[in-house]
View 1: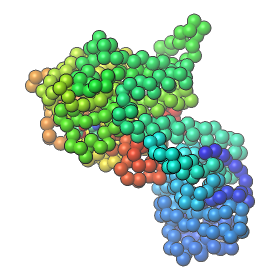
View 2 (view 1 turned 180 degrees about the vertical axis):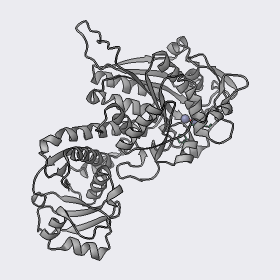
View 3 (view 1 turned 90 degrees about the horizontal axis):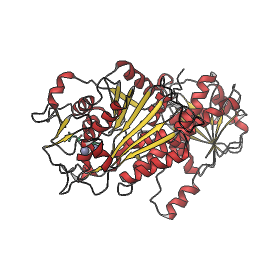
View 4 (view 1 turned 180 degrees about the horizontal axis):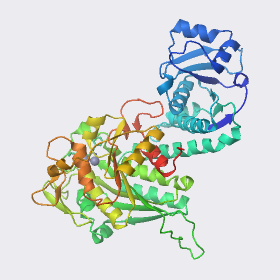
Length: 511
Ligand code: BES
Ligand code: ZN
Ligand code: ZN
């Protein structure tokens, strides 16, 4: 899909479908919508009355143009109340989804006058929405379905603006495309069946990323190296699987390579560690999950996939930070070799973990990754993990739990989330609950023992491995996977949740 910005008379642009937005509760059509109504001889206003169109969020009103204006068809999209209206990303996604009903090849959206800053943000969001709303995971479909998908593709998405020169908005199109591509990259990884998306395959994906950018280097630890580095926690989880585990360490070098081939080190630059849970399949291990709960467990590497997704665009994001990506990668499987409830593992930082439930494996593999980040002198750690079902109980499927040991960093991530349109909600690290994960036989145990607060005790467990380093933990168990289509820009299946928050964090679009 080609996305373009044009400054032209929208009534003269021959799109297959023209979309305009209308707020809820507006007494009278205003601005370009009034202009459109006039050009169509008042059909828009009479249809609004006849059809009882209220302008509620995502409401759609189809208008025939009968050749009176250049666009073949017009669709009015309800934007909801002006104060808390549908964001342009969602509007664009609603439009491209609707356009498929008409096999439209060129889709135009007319947007009103606004400040340059607002227009830039709208163009980024519209571009993201047009691309993300068109996403479909078709890799494993047959030829016919693939051909049908190709045939229905929208060729051009045109944003018709007023006031600002289109060329000033071209970088915003690039930003929107970059962001959407990273999100779709993650969706593809997470949607891939677990037997194909093995830890080995995750390593291959990481290797590909280093080929695309000279500023990314990669270190991969195999089992032997993990033993050498005392990563006993990750190794304990990996024991039951026939697939070998890997620990992936990506590094983004913000400064150019010097003539001696070395990267110029700038010790002033902050080191940010992005850590993603990389369980390529979570069967629960010997504490086996019931089959229904296992069905979507290929998503358990979604945090790791987000880290890979960020590295897929990191050069374009160009942060002045040394960004590291850590992914402890393994399956969690039952077998004669698997870790048993009651086993004790020793993490890299030498803390011992009593594994009472092998299904609480995420925190165990993260224990080594977080210890590694601390040993590497991280200034900031952000982890993303499909960690607990309890977080879904608490916040539902659309909201990630945010936990932090540092108020400033917590606020920063909260702000990034708000600007990105991905929902997070801060949860407390209640120090009194620490006692719930006290073990009688080891330094810590991996479950809270059925006293509720499951996502908090999981976060408190992680906190034990970050020391004093400012850290944010995002429990993305809910929003990583969509069981129903709440947003037009987020299709069923893998969502790519977390990518946009991290983009905002590394490269704020906010003023
Ligand atoms: N991967 C799961 C968490 C999960 C559940 C992610 C549902 C996405 C959807 C995690 O490893 C897990 O099994 N957690 C257990 C912990 C419990 C045994 C203490 C859970 O939340 O039930
Ligand atoms: Zn589990
Ligand atoms: Zn898991």
